[in-house]
Length: 491
Image (cartoon, rainbow, N blue to C red; front, side, top):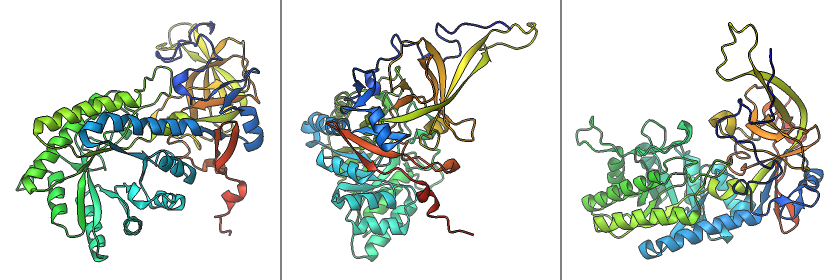
């Protein structure tokens, strides 16, 4: 069997992955604004180096740049306000708490002029503890419990986003039984197919979210579920119908889907206002704006997104001859995703040899060319980042505890769980001298990593540390073994 060198790009690497010109350099779109290297080559964030963070807080560790979070939140608010100033006086920006939520983040959100989107009673509890006014909070969810609905009403939420006809009636009945009215938005599925993973595309018909805008040919009146909901909401004494909502998916880079969804919802809104002689004062166009996870990802700046969406809303309203409703959006990942990296310590390493892509393995006399793939094991894994196994998500990684002059080696960063699919970074070029005890940083882990974390194999979930202006503080404490055992009731 002959053996190939890996001094050039490895044939095992995906086509999009190039050998970096400098393995020690930081690709700016992947990282928070304050991330750099100190004179010793150690990765720093907010003026604090990762070795100091590891010594104080351990690893794995989610490391968040607080100033970067605030800047990204403010950029969305300022950019959308400016783009929509002449259309509807600005935009209400709801931070999608499902991406990452804790009381500190709620306070940052409120201080930067944003509102908060929640999706469960637990997220409402975080909002309540943080003290954000209820009218600045929204509640999502396709299967809200009575307790969650009651909590939302008790908190005086600014909106409850309803997903189905059954839920609409239930929300209205509960509110009416308490002598009040629930402020409701109807989540619609406009049938816009975003270019994203099937499990995070949420505007097609065959999924659990929302009310279809397609006409129901089995219904005698031929009404869509969306129109039935409008009719039911306007007639229910416990419902104050604020308007319409849609969300077409997540990690989207192209503007086409957002523009088409906005146009379809505005046309539907105009038709409903005319048919039922009502005013629908609000329209929420959701979120889903993509971020950079790898060097080939090209996220769009908030100002560019805002300008493109405003142009569609402006022209469509003019064509329809209607005043624009108050627009709202729900960025989550686009605010928090790139603010955070996960810090890991390297443990075991091994290199395997893999047949060349497309090799049959037969009839060649055992002379297939093979290529090395190095496995770099770290002290976390799918328990702190489930996205690779859920969505085939790609990530990047960099040697964080030092710089290295070594040649690039194709590597696969894996976790310590008892699963072959426990992969943190499927393909990345790292220095050939990476060794046990080194620290790796994986950027872009602010969204849906801590939020989806688990205790698989009884690993404690990592803490989250916020860094700003040379100081660091825990905003979520890492779990201990005592935490893991505290719910075990014994034999």
